[in-house]
Length: 503
Ligand SMILES: Cc1cc2nc3c(=O)[nH]c(=O)nc-3n(C[C@H](O)[C@H](O)[C@H](O)COP(=O)(O)OP(=O)(O)OC[C@H]3O[C@@H](n4cnc5c(N)ncnc54)[C@H](O)[C@@H]3O)c2cc1C
Image (cartoon, rainbow, N blue to C red; front, side):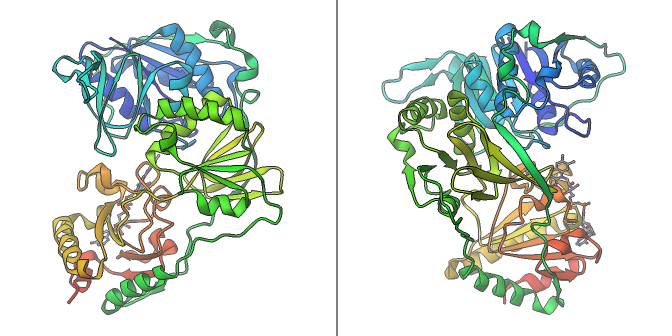
């Protein structure tokens, strides 16, 4: 079985951690012939050569000035040309890069290289000849797929698709280290000419989205009020009370845009901030199944007939898989995870965090419709989230028990407690990855976010800054988390724990 793993060297010269996970996933597949593929500048060749020591005998380096400055559409196009030459059974991509942070390239590439798609894979169950895992459609037992891949995704759903296929994986594996005796493989360099690329579809030229400006992002910073332990429960109550009045800001633009579509209700606040002429698209009109490809194909045809100016999407995993496929079919730009929109009545300006949220970029789209996924929160949010970091390691089980107990006690008031974690806690196996909040985890926005033993790295803040009230508990008064907290308790979790219990 031929497996191509798409890897990117991030701006700081490292292998993107999601791609490291993808590579490890590929190496674990029995009888897999693993090939690495990367588009990047000169120095990427060196990274690929080192990576071949882990098991891939060949790597392909797409390197040409014409590829520079590519957005996800142009990247998807360029990679798709290489995939068509290599003809793999399976392509594995990381869910997203940590510098670009869009999660669009995988779905976009799947359309352009004509591959079936599963996104957000947490576990590969079966691959190749599916044998007893033959996939049946449930109605008349028709076998849909004999040779393919079956994976569990982030929603815990088992999905099966036929080869050739592309999967995007979550950060589920650590990449192995090379053995001392390992040998390097070969790196083949392909230019635009080798790929027979249409230069108007590569690099900056082929990228419909443009960054117009960027600003330092102070978003998420709060004025912290330090409180004694005895006031902790009071602060939680204040947070819950404040939640009732937490309205999403709608600052309406003076000259609104016409013909704005939104897929589902999730982007409504964003749509209303730029337009009075909004059409809601019900995805079930196009397909009643989860299948994002079937939706994308039908919806893209519909868009071509009606020419909306803008299409907005939510940021749930379905939208994040469907939107890049629609963008690829329409050859239009898609801006990921916008936190604000603006317009002058003609152009849509999209604002999104970049580089782990340190910078906010202002982006426009040269093509129509301009598309954006907007940052809405993942569903299933609890009211009070207790998020634990490495500093809570001694009391992890006590905290878990406390959260379960409090959840039961507060149920009468209709208030749900839940756990979350920092990457520090996940990497040290104190918590499962499904709980990780942050740039390489999920986003949450509970009424109250209690950060316990979390230092407050920007990577973590990116996933929790939209919480209603943030309470930080940390013995280090200089811990950055206090800059992002409304209330702070300077103390160890061992001291604080008894004060968290509801009487
Ligand atoms: C590309 C990339 C992506 C990343 N993605 C994420 C992400 O998605 N999510 C994420 O969280 N991180 C992410 N990180 C990691 C991030 O930069 C931090 O390393 C991580 O958040 C630190 O976790 P932590 O706060 O639990 O641990 P630490 O930074 O080690 O902090 C532990 C804290 O616990 C406090 N403490 C110690 N003892 C106690 C005690 N007894 N009681 C209470 N507090 C105590 C300490 O004062 C310290 O502030 C990413 C990093 C990179 C490079």
